[in-house]
Image (cartoon, rainbow, N blue to C red; front, side, top):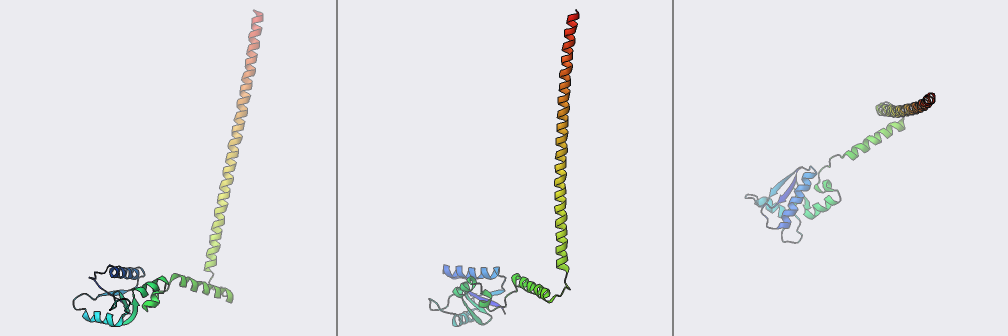
Length: 195
């Protein structure tokens, strides 16, 4: 069944044009198949009469476009369409079978897995083995990270030890230089005395 939208291609009414564009845009965004029937085209007098006799009159003498039908079954006008869109019942309004949503698929899969758990049927162990593999991978990543952290700590400890050793050596070396300087002074004093 095809949704038919009766429109007016040459309407001077801005509100009618805006409403027609909105209806077509929403149908496009929802991926609903539709055909447009322009009642102002030559040779479409029968379609115009059909729309006017089957459509709902709101504020004017005749029903204004856009008027929405599912084949020959009347669905409603713009206001009905807009309300159905707002309350998320557009498929019901258009009398089309709704596409299965991903939420429904997920719910069905969840209920199937719950049935398996309740019945004790373990024929499908793949998801849990994937979970076990993911857990093992996660643990090995954690282990690698902790080992790398330990390695970084040991390297920093080693570098600190090297720094303190070299500091000790340099202090010892400067003390030795001071001692040799003191000895040189003593020698020069002794040499002066001898002279």
